[in-house]
Each structure stands twice: as C-alpha cells, then as structure tokens.
Length: 358
Image (cartoon, rainbow, N blue to C red; front, side, top):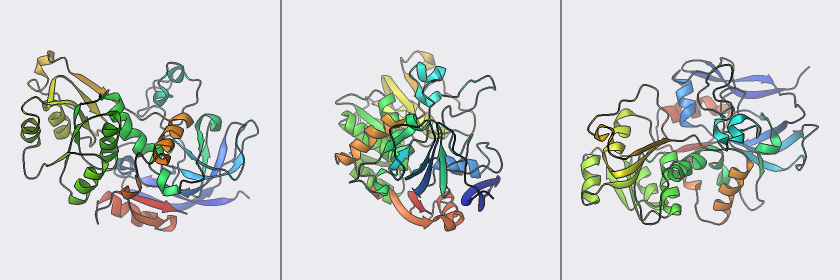
C-alpha cells in the first residue's frame, strides 16, 4: 500500500481542504523533497476563488523549501538529505521557450493550446508544495542547494515573491538615477521596491494604504509613500516628480485602476512593468496611452525559474543586501492550513506572508 501524506487540495471554488493522498513516485529525472517550510501566495487565492482554473484534486502551492528525500536514478550532483529550494517556475531546460532564453514560458503555447503562466507547474498543472512531500520535475535544472548559514525563512521568498518582484524591476530596465513608482506594497510590490533600489533607482515612490506595509516599504527602499486613500496617487506622484513623471512604474496588484494609474504617471518614453495577475480584461485609456504616440513600453513578467535564478537570489540574501524575513508575519502548521487560507484570503491581522511547516 502506497505511503500517504497530508496535502492542501483544491476541491472546488472557495474550498481548499487538508486531506491525504499518496506520496509521489520518483521518475528518473525527478527528486522527492520533504517540505520543511512553504507559504501561501496571492495566486493561490485566485485559485481558491475560482478566478484561475486548476483541476479538482490538485495539491496547491508553489514555494517549496525542503530536504531531498529521494533522487531519481538519472539525477546527478545532489545527495539525499540536502537542503534545497526550487523555483515556482520549473523549466525543463530543453523546450523551445528555454532554448530561446525565456525559461519562464516553458510549456506555453504547446500543441494542447496555450496554458496561462507558462512554466508555472507546481500547484497549477502538477501537484504543489503545500504538502508533506513534493515531486520536483527536471531536478537537475531546478533544485538549488541552500547555503548552510541561511534559515528556511530567509530563503522562503526566493521561489516566487522575491524572484517576481525583482523581475518587475529588471523588466522595467531600471537604471542608476531613475525615479520609480511601485503600485501596491504587498509582498511582491515590496520586493519590487527592494529590486528597484538594488538596480540603482534613487527615488522610489510606494503606493499603498496599509500602515504596516507602508512602514516595511520604507525599510525595503521606498523614499516616499503615497496613501491612495488620502490623495489621488497620480496627482501626488506628478507633484513629487515636479510634473516630470516616473521613468518606470511597476504595477504589482493586478487591477484596472492600478494599471491605469501606473500608465498615467509615466514620463514620455517611460516604462510600465506589469506584475499583477489580472482576472478580467484590461482597458487602456486613450489619453493615458497618448493615442499610441507616447513612446511608452508596457512589459509583462512571469518570474524566471531554474536553479541559477534561485542561486542568485540566495546570494542576495547571504550578502545581506536584502532581508525578507519581515514579510513573514504569521506561522502555521500544515494541519492548520485551512485556517491560514482564511486569514490570508481575507487579509486580516496585517498579514503579509504565512510560513507553513508540516
């Protein structure tokens, strides 16, 4: 009889429950890791609410920190008992997208039709990380050893939140001396703020209304905080920039109003870097778009995955360039994950991220 494990399973919209399922079998190129810490992402809430479709019975979660339990017969360069992370995006390394250098889009536009989110497989097209064990495909492409000096919580943001936030700044091609606005200071927006600072932005304007998030935004590198409940954020950002506008606006929420505001605060030729996951059609206003004549760039980003991306992010943590531990505001055992979902989905108690430990 197959060994069983506990897992957070999508049953139907508005129902993710803790149940049992078999521990996965390990194929030649796979690795089975025993999860030591994971978390819940805003995208998981889109799944919970039925705004992003996944198969019923799927284990949710895409941010794994763990220990190698078993290696596939063809996997080399790793050992059982080793602490590792894997990115939320798990490229194969040999798809058309990978060979074009766009690892995040591995799996998009296949013969089976386009699947949103490209190379995002954990908790999307295969079982995910909110469980006692996780099967990692293409292990030699995706497993990144954790430096001994780093704790689980220090690297917990690397698989997705930190990678995505940094990607928003990188895709915006931020330069030394740039002025940057980051709309929404949730976990991804906070990491985008930190990424903008690391890339050389000298004026960073964060937009939010939650006091705790606004405070952390300053610690992450924001020079100004705009409370959108007290002032019009577009007017205030234009005032702060002397009417010039920003070089790069990062949209980290996924709503029409923040997308539109990000477009309106751009300087001529500025870049809108969109990180949000949108659950409906976007409209681009004629005036904000300058009728298509503003030389603006609109770029979307899905964070890159693979072990080299994870290694680089952990180097940032190890070098003390960024401390993401303040983002973990609540901790739950896996047995209480339904309670954790309720807290996170309803954004109570100032929650930013929850650490889940089996």
